[in-house]
Image (cartoon, rainbow, N blue to C red):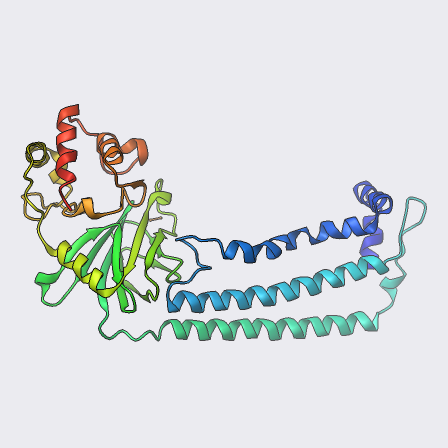
Length: 369
Ligand code: CUA
């Protein structure tokens, strides 16, 4: 270390650095070295900030185990970081100072320092032990994640599309199956088995409060199991770049008490209610007469396509366009009128409907509770 510092001090930039250190004081320079460690001091505050998409606030047993592993990794890395920094600062402190007049001191090159050799061996041994410790913790966490008991769990088939999530709640008998999109409801305390598929490119399912990531791979089914132990609304996000609107491929997971979940599921199984008000009836006619039905399903009507999200109960969802907009009348109107404005290159084209027709269609969609 001493050798290299002597060489470095030959370079003008290093000389400037050296003169700064002598003028302002060595302490300030050492503070600069410590700057990268600042996030570690700030982290605990950030960790406690409330958020509904936050791996630091686990709402399920698996996210908890992942967080434990994360803290262990952070702890070990922090200790190593501080140790390396301390060794570095010690080397800097004990190095002989050079200036423009003194020549390079290369005498240590010709001798072997027994202390350095021992220190290096010790550091290699410590690194090996720590890396093995992390490896063992990693394997143990992985095994623990795979051991969630799955009896009486609910099963969901989740298909990734560019850029939305198609969900099918499978059931026995099949008449109890239902489809929805971009919003999963799950019962608190019950295991959930999610089969992951993709219709186009690789996506990744990630709901940080509940579990780690799992990819959705075309032509292959993967499975993720999770359990929410705290009721709440948890935001998930596609975590694998899948094209232009990858960032707008979100979903909500709503964990609720079992009775509420059952009520929700029962409602989702029903066909859409027939509209009763005049604008909604007109809206339904327009909806069924236009290209909307080339892509969407509304159970109980002739609209049975599956290129886009199932709209049978769209009014019961909190967001539209895969978490892009809150599900309000204004947003829904703006979205149907010109989806490209919010999600350029999404498959849904701008609407050719006149103002009145559009209002009628929105009135109809709002009845789809
Ligand atoms: Cu789907 Cu990124």
